[in-house]
Image 1 (spheres, protein in one colour):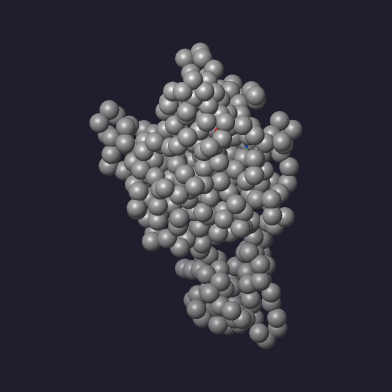
Image 2: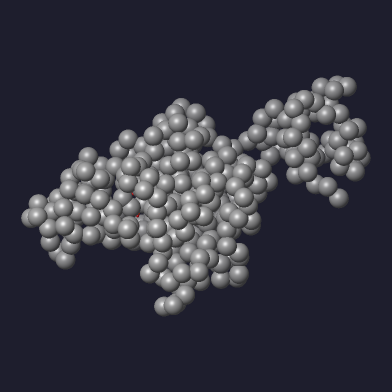
Length: 331
Ligand code: BT5
């Protein structure tokens, strides 16, 4: 028997009104059942106009990340989003992806949640993921590569996020090497890539992406360094639409670059390049200019002492931007 998601699909695909009789015919259910389904959708936040003798018309879609809403907004070829898991609340979408990855979930699965109770950043840092305020999701990938060959994936993901944000909001989203997406000098998105592998084989790879969409404000410790799409544009963003767009861009990039390389576009989007930077290496504080990105994704820094070094991990502070050490303390 058809459920209310089928009714939603029909309403979505119809421009004008559809009578209760026509809906009951198409769904193969009674008119009373149609009415019940309409009420159920209204409770989920869908706005449905009803006019006597004309019927029903969909007039408003909520900012829902339900599987049905995500699926309705997928426009890629179908690999990314073949399996969608949407949860009201979860510890971390990366952790959910790992659990389901261990249980055999397929390449291209997407895990999305309205709230994360244990959202995480790199080095055990916390990622603030309040309910309804952002798009928190993870993609499960099963590339046939060695663990040493996954160096491009975080960079590629950042490009997909910039493209998706720009397409939907017009915001000039850029990248602070390696994994922050910023608007101006504030962070709108963070990416955490995790891996399950043996020496010779990657079981799966999980880029986890957190984008502040509709946050009106942040906790005091983040307020001068975090922003949201709503703060930047004054408009609400429908997260399922943004997710659909990012998955489409991700699929396009993944099919062209895989996980081992990244698009040249990364460099033109990267705000770190050409700026003074400082970092700590082997207990030594170094300063210099971010001069380029190596093919393996490392940041090339021309130091004041005249050396050119490749930085693959750790915190690089870009002049004019926020920074923090591995304890999450700012400097
Ligand atoms: C990151 O780490 O930026 C990676 C964040 C990844 C989050 C996604 S959400 C979906 C998936 N599931 C997860 O559990 N994680 C991923 P890092 O570069 O270490 O930055 C963390 C720092 O960003 C924190 O120490 C804060 O200073 C700051 N921060 C925390 N929450 C933030 C937010 N909502 N917006 C902006 N900055 C935030």
